[in-house]
Image (cartoon, rainbow, N blue to C red):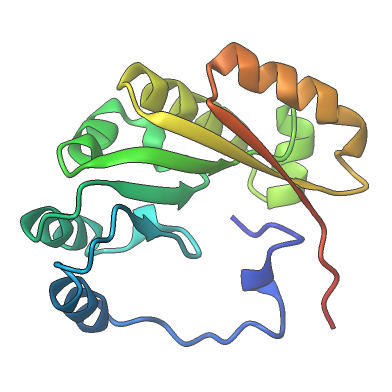
Length: 169
C-alpha cells in the first residue's frame, strides 16, 4: 500500500533496509533477555521473502509470542494465517482507515485493498488471535470514526487505536 500519510512514505524516512542476518543475530543474542513479544512491522512484514525463516528462528529460540503490524491483505488467505499461527504469531495490529472501500482504498492508494483487509481480520479472528486496529485520523476519514469503531466491534476486534496525523517536513 502507499498510504498518503505514512511515515514510511515520508521524504524524511531513510530507505535503509534491515538485513535478515542482523534480525537473526538480534534474536539469537537476546533469546534469554526476557522478551515476551517480537514485534514485526515495516513497511509490510508479510511480504518479506524470509518472513517464515525469521518466525521459525523466533520460535526456535523460545520467544513466546509474535505480533505483526500489517495491512492484513495477505491474511485474506486462511492457509497463510495458519502458517503464521504455527509460528506463535498471536496478535495483529491491522491498519484500517475507512469504513468502506471508497475511503480505505483512496487513503492507501490500493484498489481492492479494503476487502482484503476485512477478510484478513475475519480470518485472524477465526484462528483465535487478537486483533488491534490502528486507524490514522485524517480529514478524509474523520467523519467515519464512529462507523469505523462499529465495524471493528462487528468484526470482533479486541482493541482500537486512533492515531492522529503527524505532519512532517
